[in-house]
Length: 391
Image (tube, rainbow, N blue to C red; front, side, top):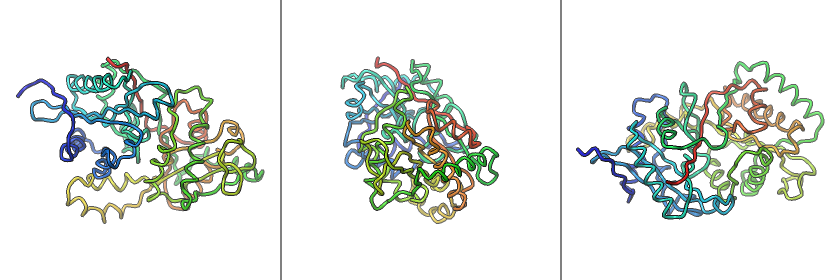
């Protein structure tokens, strides 16, 4: 068998299934890995169905040594982001590989070539086309499974990527955990602070209006692009289409009572109006950790895996995954964040969740990590994204 590594473009449905199925080989001995749902991955990466292809271009590559697949990568150009940030970046994602520097070199060399052909100047990632899916490489926290939308990578990925000249970009993103069954004393103190904020009556906390979800998406879009504007951290602006593509699929699993908005009178003139005529100045969204269900389904890779579904869905998630706490900068000292945090904790406890995951939040975020740790949250995972100039 040849020891040379050849990188080939992925063509057709059967090759794309093999591309995604390669992950089962990488993680076959890893009990913490949660297989992605293969039908969903096929949809995301299908140019006819995937939301990303409405705004950009992507190509998928598999590395082979002889007839054996040994790695995968996706190279993508997000035209909307290039226009917004003015940096001609190539996004890479769906990165899986054996512990082999030659494989890593071949995969990134092909991504470099793809990027150069399109006038792109740097590689940035990993992101699995969606900036909230498969964000970064796991650098700390391999003692428990990831929650929904969070990745899980072997430790050697970091070593290989950094050895090829990639450097961290942005602060790391962290996951934090809050125990609701045996709440820490800090959470009780936060509850007392929230009570004071309630008495002032400045903010109205409400659940999401799913019947008018596109209106809610506009409010989320504004908050995403304005709540961290003063951090000094390099951020990718959110296009409206990306916000809708993030929200639409979770409507099937989200409990509207656990997707919270903080509304108040006044607010920025350019902000979308809230349903009562005020302005939504904060948002705290949480969804059930569906990884507790899907980890039993083997990614629906085989036809018989569907027979596992009754058993899998009998396992009610005990974790509530809170994906974003956003408050406009001018309201950071107002108590709005504490109110949202406490309200979510109280509602989650009533619905019999035992803990809340907060993921992912940037270490550079001026509010969420501080507030979470004030509530007794503990950091349990860390992820890092990387950039390298095209070679």
